[in-house]
Image 1 (cartoon, rainbow, N blue to C red):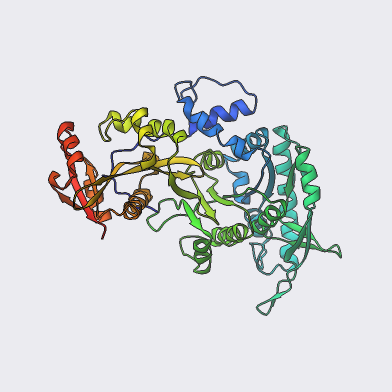
Image 2 (tube, rainbow, N blue to C red):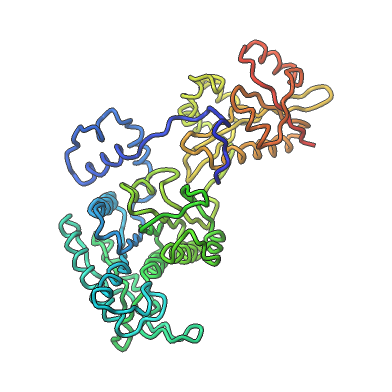
Length: 472
């Protein structure tokens, strides 16, 4: 998984942490390998990172993940590591179904044969020569994949769990040997998963007459996920989705994914557009999360699944981020998040007791249940006005430039309005430009503060800038 927070908006960020070391340790532990104390995996790599990763495990245990791997990745140097990541997931009692594509292999084989393909993506027309090349390429690919998985001592089986039929005539074109999935044998797949056997599905199917039909691997993954009520579909792709500036596109709603597919965004090839199309369908039909990750990145699969923001793109049907009132149980997490910023004086130091005493004023921004930001609204009654103060605004460094700060301030404004406040004030030593330029605040002088707050301001000696925004 918005890119709005300015670089100088808030010093209240904790230091970014590399996922490589804890993920490597996790991989080795899960595969019962001794952990070598190397430069990339040593105890000095913070153990809280590993604990952070492991907190996801209870959420994922006994859940079904459908992983669809692009064929082009199967011959890349990082592919063995990707299969090891799959082994890690299974060792954590996650039920994995593997689907693979073969577009790259089909193209290469067709070129060797001097054959012009009728289509190469499993969605367009498949004539007989194209089907024959596809069958040979996919069969070879199946054999190689089974060998690689067996070498990792993973119990696997190629499953014929798809009932298919010819796609027929679409827009006046007979698609010939292109198929569409009619039904998924969820019962058989379920038996395999409960027996800790990984089902592997090819982009091929067979109709009631015994005819072989070519399928789109993205469609296979999504149909299987829907039939198994999977928690996730993960497309491990040749490339990732990007924003216009080239940065990673972290998250998409179903509507946005559909629009990108329909508009045929020129930044993304037909392979990624297919994933947008089927990913949106999966979410619409009940799969909570669909992930698209760049398979050429090291540790991409585990890093996407076991961190708040991941490294790929997540398509979601619901709003997976929420702002809620803070609870007493949030106090340790709030203190842990803000510790670094308090030590650097970017935030006023607060003790556990101080936060606990005003916990009803605090609110938390969380992503999939993990706090990534917070704020507080304190109210003051004056003789002729009611003033609210936005305090303790904080966003994790690893989540900056994603619009979270604006969301928190907008939430604070609504809280202040509900309390009948006339104005909202904020004190800032380093983020005043953010309040001015992004949120419509104006710099004023300390006389605008409520009397009780002015006294604390004078005693603090922080010389913070005072900003104010009218709410009525």
